[in-house]
Amino acid sequence: MDGLFMLSNASAVTNTINYRTIQPGLPSGTVMRSIANNGDNWFLTTNKGVFTSATGATWTPANDGLATSDVTVALGFRTTVLLGTRKEGIYTTPASALNWVSRNTNFNNLETYAMESSGERIVVAATEKGVFVSRDLAASYVRANKGLSDSLNVTYLKFYGSSLYASTQNGGVFVSADTGKTWTAQNAGLTNLNVKKIYASSSNVYILDDSYGVFQLNGSRWNSIQAGLPVNTVLTSMAFYGSKILLGTLGQGVFTREVASGTWTAVNTGLGNLRVTSVATNGSRLFAGTDGAGVFVANLDAANWTPTAATSISHTTLMGLDGSKIQDMAYYNGYIFASYKGGLLASSDNGQTWIAGGNQFNLPSYTGVHKISFVTTRVFVSTEFNSLYSNALSELPAVVTGVNDLNLALNAAIRIVPNPNDGRFAIQLENASTKVEGSHFV
Image 1 (spheres, rainbow, N blue to C red):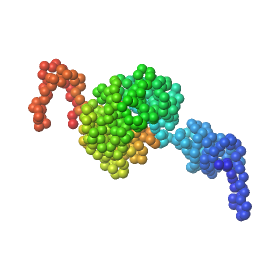
Image 2 (tube, rainbow, N blue to C red):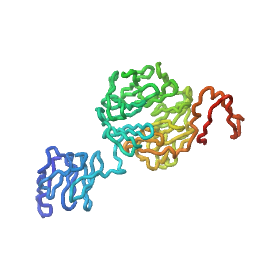
Image 3 (cartoon, rainbow, N blue to C red):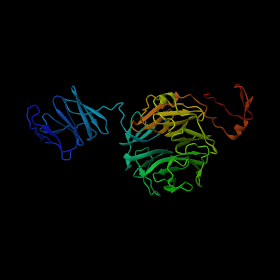
Image 4 (cartoon, rainbow, N blue to C red):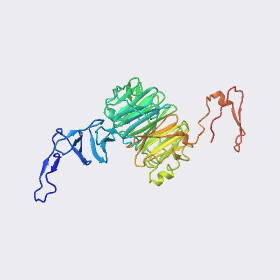
């Protein structure tokens, strides 16, 4: 803490040990991190960059090529010097010509706070270094923080139509109409600018803040829709079905409310764990993921919740991971997905059976999986310490997701004969002039 010192005569036999400071060339306020020698020169890492010296008498900055001055450790290895930084990964340089080059391919050390994907190729990630947008299916990213004043503390990302919304810890809510190229604050009506999550129905945008508040965006102003919720209820998640909202809470269970207006009503019959971490819907079922009891399912009337099959697979069981502590849920393309620490599962039969949501071996077992999102061909998840991971949806068996362009008149004209049947049947269309197209069946 007092600086850098060198022993004046380390090899002499003496009863007196004398040190002298060797700090010429170092800026004031320099914090020493580590020191190394490659046989020819000393390398000193500090909070103000890396310095080099042949004898330690005078130090010279050697920061060409570095994206940060916050360096932590240096190591001489043969004719190369390696450098570790606090948030920019690893660099190397030839010892003969000091010019650092980033060496971070396949080295993923970014803490990720939020993630969102859309369409065929758009992936957005909020990290400890700000917001980044990929338009080529995560092959490359560009920084996207212009106007986002709290870009290092983004908590959630959500697309609503062509607009991208971001919530932050200190700056409230921001919106971008150009997928992150420019951002504008949208905080009218908010008294607390620490916003945790953003959700969107087909007609509205909603936020949950860290003071137990839930708000709906009306025009350009946020309005509280708190009525009916117990005081200080910790809100965790939101989903939509029909004309209603499904709200998960940590300790008070599940609530529903009409999108247009009304008050929240608790619907917890059969819910064996009221610590609900995530909710989701698939059009015909409601799902609630809990902290310790796995996933529960209910019909659209939410009259009674029943537990699904155990959320565990052989790989995560072998790793000692607790599949009952659900962290996020989502629905896409016939499957309901559930995540927990180190694992992602999927079910095509409303939770009667669960399978791996893709290859689990590359998903770190030591990190939480806090957000699930989709492009048309892949599922993406965000992790705490290792950024984003994705898997091809083609690894999951195809399922029947519905009948295309089904209207009431056509529905009334469809006949399955015989009904019931032994698995062999015919589909008849009565008084209907339309084309029937086939897809995958399982």
